[in-house]
Image 1 (cartoon, rainbow, N blue to C red):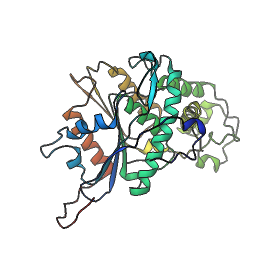
Image 2 (tube, rainbow, N blue to C red):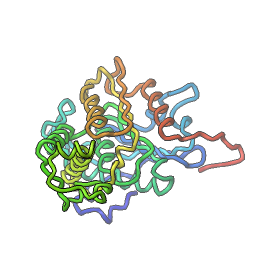
Image 3 (spheres, rainbow, N blue to C red):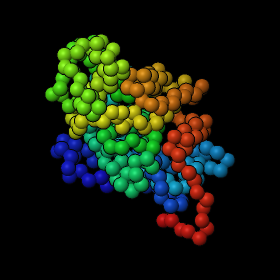
Image 4 (cartoon, helix red, strand yellow):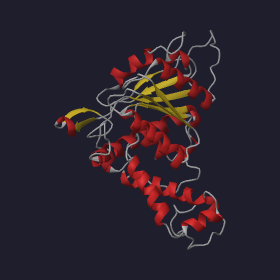
Length: 329
């Protein structure tokens, strides 16, 4: 279980059950952390997810024989939209059709869940290294994955995957970025988030306008605004803020986003806009967007097959031949 002794008191309030762990069939070399959707749990979600056929050879366990699957369960939270009934959810949310509505309900849960997911990442990275850990989520689990990825301060991950989801506070983050681009009038030498390491050593003069600065340093102005935009998200969630390195960790983590065109819970447009924002505004190096005709709020064999190919290609994970003389627990 994740050690919360070093977390702020308000982050310890949520109770997360022990994750469901599916050990690898061969030597443990990789880890996939997979988050279920709202109202579900690891015990409900994992069996059907792992049983889904991807290739003729079987499902995910056979496809990734060196992978340990970690299925966390969301804590019990009162859902405002259901008259405060208690359900498993990564964070409270008033409307999946319009996540921006009553967005303040999301803050406490996202704060606690993000800290919890970061703890899981640290545990698995200690075992196999960051480039051998992938983060994956469905629906609200996708939303939690994206926020956890954007606020992750460690090494880049092997990959991140989101199915049928969205990025919470996307509109607010876009507004923050636009405001910075329009209103910034200088580069503040006292602000540790205002410059990358290269800029600290380059002797860039203060009091440059955004336009002049970007003309003299192509692309660097946008880098500063991206760092500040991400800082605003961490501050909104009251998460630890450290001076980032550019490119930031999430920018170097390959991301796959898949969505059904007939999704009746999370509109296709929210997934598409999330992909656009992360790739264009936040400059993620690899964002693969796929939409699936006729698919509702779920995954499909085609989507899972695309995800497997993506993870294998971007992570470089290899599948060694099984050694009949070896036994892995």
